[in-house]
Length: 341
Image (cartoon, rainbow, N blue to C red):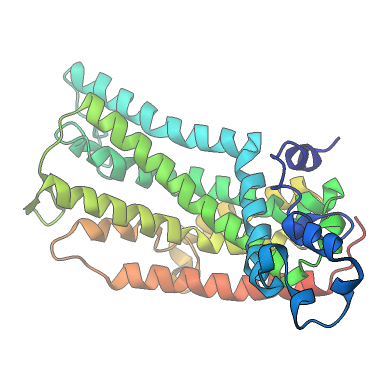
């Protein structure tokens, strides 16, 4: 039995088999019971008592619930998979390792900065304020760990269903290809936010445990209160999550091109690595502002006083452009794709 089928069977009753997710296309739950109880009268005119569901509620009132059922089911399936939980666990472990490494180095009288003076961003500030572990962990995971995790989830979103033989059954129900693809994209974006928050929360917990907390010294040299610094950390987490939307859109598009989940995941991760290599080659400076990872580290400008918004806005606009372009390409491909499995 495939992983996708196993994941859907493990869901509590009423989640995996939402009205939009039934294999035979028939509604379930109160709507189905109301239709069965009414018998021939339910097949009559859509007006009057025959058009009403349980407890006299109009059937049209059930439509928003059916619309949200697919999204709720996809989110539940995604975050119940062992692969998703394993990825989140690895991301949560990164700040722990960074915090322990910095603590051991400083306890031995060393500094956290590399002898050449080119240590990772915010690493030297952790010993004075544990809140900087949040910024250092996000800076360390954003180039590699976070986009790779997003690539795995987004790349497997459609291709994994096709490979497991469950995609055709999803489309048998009155879900519609557009709404199913939108649900897959929403799940990928939700994972972007969840992964970023896991890194930030783990870093904050480790930073508070191993290092002192207090007022935050900004990059500009001014000091802000711990509460203000915590608010900036939350805003930085949101910006980092939004910075991964471009990867999610690219992964979704790749996922519509193949029926192999492994191939889609490998291709997406490979594209992420290739684009980052291109972004580091000085001779390609003309195209680098159009590459999705180019402005990823612009979140550091939120630690300035006043905040520099120029590159942050460019980053968010670029991610939105990738979402529109590759989201549209994914829709064009998926809406005309012959679903054989």
